Structures are given as C-alpha cells and as structure tokens.
Image (cartoon, rainbow, N blue to C red; front, side, top):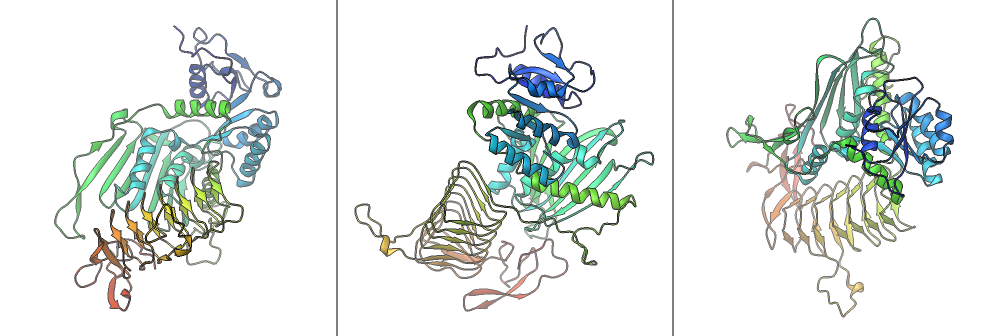
Length: 552
C-alpha cells in the first residue's frame, strides 16, 4: 500500500537537496503529499525512502542538473546553513520556489538579497521557523498574547542532544536556531542585550555547549541552554508568568506536550512564595510541524500567496547568532569581545540596529502614512491617510488607524481595534482586543457629523482593557488602567484603576501595572507614590530588592 498522495495536474514537483539529518524528514513529507520528484546530494547516501514505496523518486548527484530541469518547480534545502544561501540563490535564479531551513543565511546582507530576489522573480521563499507550524508553540503564543499567563517574567529553553559528528558550526547555530526564534516570538520583541558563554572539546575549538542570556525592554529575561554532549535528549521551553507557568516539552506525546501550571499563593500577600497547582492540558488538532510546513509551502507555490515567514524573521535571529559567535570565540581566546550590555566598557556591542517596519502583504497602507522602524503590522490592518505610527509598535490583525491619527512609540494595538480621527496615543499605550474608541458623541447614520469630532487623548503608559469603550472627548491619564468591558465617559487621573459602566475608580496602579496598597506603595516593585494635581506621581525610586525592572 502506497503512502503517497496521488499527484494532480496542479501539484508542484520538488527536489530535496541534501540528505543529512533533515533531508529524509522533508523527503518523507513531500512524498506523502505527492510532490517529491527527486533527491539530490553530492555523495551517495543511504536512500532516505524505501524504494518499494516510492519507486518514482529519482536520485541525483549533480546540483546544476537539478537547477536546469524544467519539470522541477521548487526545491527544499536540507544542507548546512553555510551552504544554504548559495543554493537558494541558484534556485531562485533558475526560477524555482525555495523552502529553506532557519536561518536562511548566516548574515543579514545575504538574507536580504535572497528576499529581494524572490520578490523580484515573484517566487515563494519560505523559511522553516517551527513556531509557525508547531501546534503547541502556536497555542503557547496565543496564551501569552491573551494574558492568560499574567505578566511574563522569564523564558527558559533547553535543547540537549548527543552527537559524535565533527561540528562545522557552534552548537547554537546547529541546535539552537529554532529555540532562539521561538523565544523571540514568545517575547514579542527583539532583545536589548545578549550575552553567551560556552565550552568546547579540546580536540575541536568549536563550542558544543553554550548558554545564551537575553534581556527584553519589558523586563522579560530569556535563557537558552544548548548542548550536543549530553547523554540524553531534551527539548523543553518553560514560560513563567505572574499567574501561570507553561511548559512545552517536545519529547512528550501530543497530549502532554503543552502543560499549564496555575500558581497557588501561600497567603494573600504579593510577596508570598507561590507553588504550582495541578497542570491542565489544551486540546486541539495535532500535526507534525514539518508536515504542516511542507503542506503550507505547496499551498503558497500553488496560490502565489507569500508565507508569513518569508525570511524577514531571520534578521533578528541572525543578529543574535553573530553576537553569540563573537562571545563564544572570546571564550576560546581567539577573539576579545566585550559582553553585550556591560557598563564597564565603551566597546559595548548593540544588536538593536533598526530595521524597516514589517508589513504583512494583506495589510493596506496609505501612500502618505508614516511608519516607524521596527514596527510590525499584521494581516488585514489598514493605515489610512495622514496617520503617523512611531517605532517599535505592534499593530495586530484587523486594526484600522486613521485618518490623521498619531500613535506614539512602543504602542500595542491588539486585534479588531479602530483608532479614529481625533484619537491620539502617546508612547507605550496598550489597547486590548476589540476595545472601542468613539469619535462623535451623538452619531446619526443619516446626518454627517464629521465636523463634530471630539479629541481623545491617551497618555503615556496607559492600558485599555479588552472590549472597553472610550467615549470621545476624554483624557486617559498616564499609566492609568481601564478594566475590560468598562465604559469611560469622563477624564481618568494618572495611575487610576477604573472598572464598570460607567467606569468608576477602585484604586491606583503602579508603573508596572500592579495595584498599589493603601499607603500608595507597590507590593511588587516597592515603588512609592504621592498624590498630585493629576492623580499620582512617583515619589521615590524602587528599592534595590525589587523583582523586576519598572519602566520610567
């Protein structure tokens, strides 16, 4: 009985290039989809597919021959990263769609050239970042975005393996790329600082054990431990939030891959030690990530739709890989590199070189709108004429901004929010999903009242909860917190917490989002506040023993 899907006239025909550790898996999945035509490798490896099941798959040892064949419409590359960019460029120049492994290239110049080449030739270029296709990783990202885990405190990833092969790349490049990519996706932003340490076998100067430490602007810590000298395998990611902890263990069966541990406080003080409760599981459809990625690649080839991971994600990953390599080289004595983020040297290495905004192909932007660097605009967003969006903002799907709206820096606007004319968002504003701004106080469908727009101002650091409504003509104070579903019909003071319909104040919020005590002190970061004309103002800096950094 054959495991291959019967090809149709519209089924793409692919060649898998490279038959190392990743090649057989790609070959098996593409063969099951009826798209595999050929396997190419420089040497004569053991066939990755049983010949009796897949008798039509050809074996080739000449790469130029593959590139010249018109019946091969796409290639899937499973070679080492230092060879991949060259092969990808050859394939794109030959008019073939490309499925590559992460990272696409080992420097951003090569990656950018490949992306531009694919765009110029109108070909699909897809990079296999697993978190786009791994069901557990996608559920974990949704949990974080929805706030179910609470404020994220740190992310810890481990990728341990045993390998006797002579390494061509350091262990982070060979084993940790997908973990780095997942950490960035979970954090939702590039790290501000990165530092790596490692160790190597005396017979081989390339590091095969490494730890990578990352800090993010929101106070989240990211840790990665990678090794290819362990006696056992381990592939686990732990995300610790304020209210729950999520553990994604890739070596467990599907039902146990993603477990959520609620936190049970031992007493009612925020400083109390917390213990993990009984875990619960998330149900959903399970499919091997590689199989899902292969199917998605074929769909993109057939429809012409660009994949979400068309190489742009590689830029931040490659920046981190380059910094890690320099740090690891310094550890072997071959190069002197100051750790990133050190305050002891002026030779500090900063990886945050600003990138152009990332705009999904389905988003619509007016020609005269202005988008800041490092801003991400997701599917079906619409930025209207005259609007200005600052740097490092996150504009989620189905968001409308404008016309003539100003959004400051580091703002997050989640799904299904419309920011109309007359609304101004200062820096670091958070707009929860499906919250509502109004622009006309008493609208009528049969009467045009655009001249009666009342201005709405949301001040620095304010948080607007999901499904809340901000009636036009009001000001939301600095670091104010509007509860989910509230209806705000008056000005809100700085640091005030309001809930209900109409919204009423129930307390005061710290810079970090925690509710202040009756003495106007934060029980988490120990920040102290005093009353002022506009609400509250900070009275003193946090004590040295605070748990996490609080933005000023």
